[in-house]
Length: 280
Image (cartoon, rainbow, N blue to C red; front, side, top):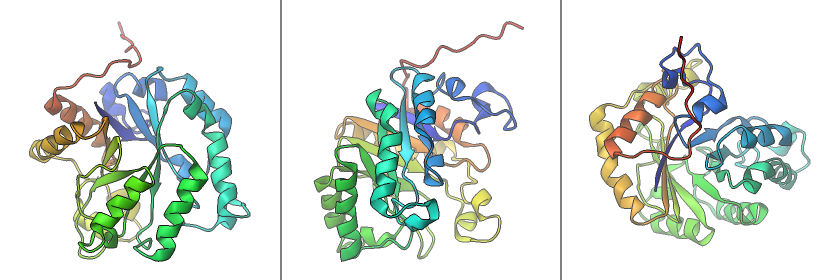
């Protein structure tokens, strides 16, 4: 099975052939794509009532990839969110996402680790601790430090992810000299996630004041999208699901790219929300 989704739902007015100033609602988004990546929990864990609302206003088969809070991935210490320790943050996160898990709508928790989270005994121990904290909840790991993919560590990295039942997040991103991880299309469990950030080298490398608005400013060409197709199709033979998330949001290109890839793959999605027909 192949699924496609975008990061957030509000920024993709092009799905309705409207401009970026038109903020999409989640029910509108769910008319077109079967999953979404929810990034807001990285900055602050939404209330249980918010997760419950999102679960009830989407079709039964719709699913969410929920980004882990920044404390959970050690971007920040627990004191930044008013918590006593990491475990307290994990506990709150797990409690609040209960409505999604109970409804079968939690595709995965996305653990995007920071660039300074490299291969070390301490970080390997922490990955084991994260699995203990999460129990049997589905989770995926995205590394931002290239040491995990060095030849001497690569197979052990994949083995660790398999042992802990973490999905390996396959990333496509600009290949800067020191701060990028390679595109490495290997699955470690029954859910393979491809997260496509675009290839804006200058925007990715430049950490100036406009960095966040420029880093994912990229529109994949038809040929670039075609190059993903063989790997996606191969992964479908090795896993139950391949989920492709477009994170190239800065210029509003993600939705158009997702629909173009859907056409290239020749797939249709069932179980979407019914599309509203505007007669006037």
